[in-house]
Amino acid sequence: MLNLKLPTDPRWVNIAEMNIEDILVDHAYCEQKAASSCISMIVNFHDFEKVVEELTPVVAEEWGHFERVMDQIKKRGYKFSKPRKDEYVIKLSQFIRKGGSRNQQLTEHLMMNALIEARSCERFKLLSKHIQDEELKGFYYELMVSEAGHYVNFLDLARYYGDQKQVESRWQEWLDYEANVISKLELRSDRMH
Image (cartoon, rainbow, N blue to C red; front, side, top):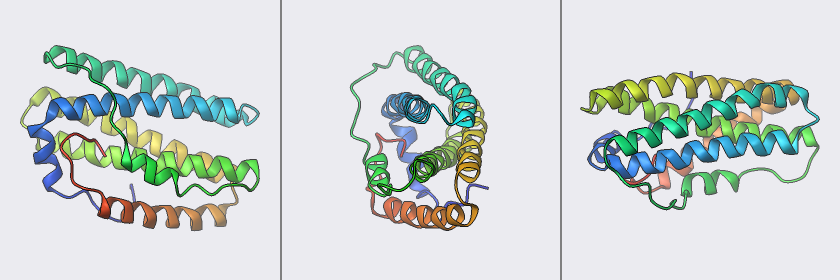
């Protein structure tokens, strides 16, 4: 369903579990950035009715996820620390085509967000299947289902506002690019991506 070209290195989940405090803190920031990204699209593309309609509830869901991750951090006695540089998102944003019509600009942002949701979904699935903490297993399973829905929302919106053939072609380019990014990123214990 996610169509990612390169799966996450299987060692990541073990490294993540050993550093779950760092993963939870980074995850909280990922949820905050996801909500902020949707807000930006709503503001920048306010005249695209379907964007406003469909992304408004996503903002609420992503912020709800942020609150739930913060609860997990607090419950475990961890500290919410400063954000870390997100190399994954930085690299993906470098692939956004500049210029073109507003529809093309929108579809670029939607596809980037779809990819981030897909990778998050894949990693949440790994956590839900392989970590020992039963509560976090269930937590990550629930979030995996939600992120999969967001992934579909973003792609459906891109297909709605973009030329079908161009969107499908560009989506394949995004998938190839993302696989290349993942292959070159260092496997880190303090990052969700």
